[in-house]
Image (cartoon, rainbow, N blue to C red; front, side, top):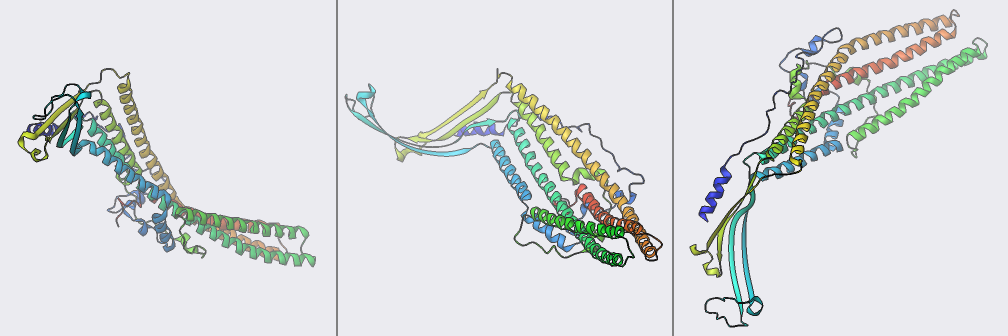
Length: 486
């Protein structure tokens, strides 16, 4: 028994080779700087000790209602729960694959009591002293205890270790996938909340405009009765009034849809925060305080890039397993224990037994299956390389686009504010000239319509500025738990 166990242990300690190919650098090159020019603020891509990626989401977003919504979403969102379960699934699969590196050791005990009929079994030499006359039956007892393992693969060529490496990287990729879902959820909630506040501002503007135009319509109607204003001017005033009424119901519908979107994103909790209070100040908040970092930071900050990298490592390890399949597969079965016909003598030295049974299987003809499996593994690695490179390229494009948007939105909002001020002055002058009889009502109509449109666009520009910052924060990997601890 000792000899068998020593031989088995020696075989287990033998280390094999690995056919996993070297990763290299995939031929990948990426820019060392973000784009520059009049559309980009150079201060946003400077070098500082703390960058946008390092800011935790609860410090980036300042609105308390929004923080509450994000917290609810992180606790209740179903997509996030599914991603978390995917991690548990991958962890279990990795554990199953990892167990193949270690032999399954079992302890077996058995007792057998057997009766043999001499008449039906032919000539039998019975137990000593039992006689042997024809027609006599014999009863045998047998006790056994064995410790060993069966068909354990000796991984001389690294097949099992390659599969284990692939499973490990699949598991790590799911962790990064969870972070991708997480930062997307945070940004989606922030964007939906921004849309809600913008539509509430537009609704407030429509309500105020409707009230003002109702007063104007009543005034024109009274003047028309007195013969001062024409029916055409009354119809023009009615057109403005009805347009504001149409907008009011449009924004009421948009607000309801925004609330439904938030309810879905946060997992439809039983108690929703109060979202009906009008908060105009939100559109003037969410400042950007830190640069976004350099392009190389994306490789270790964006979870989707990290996920694609792990998937590439997994595909590369599968090649090692496919290559190892061409070589002999060596397995080992070994046991050691005791067997005796009497229980009192079961653990005597004379009752010791052991087996040592190595097996080797060499593939000779498989109909091209092994070659096709290797080709498939190599093709999947090539696909993983392309996906990895494309993920990086998309990441740089998203960050560059967001940088341009953030860099230009300040001026766009400022220009739109100036446009609102100019449209307001024009409306005041047109109204004064109309009241003085110098201008017809068509000029007043045009000026009011342009003012209303300019005010709407100002709200949309402010919402767009906030959304551009939300997008930039997401694009650089902000909000990921593994990257943000402050």
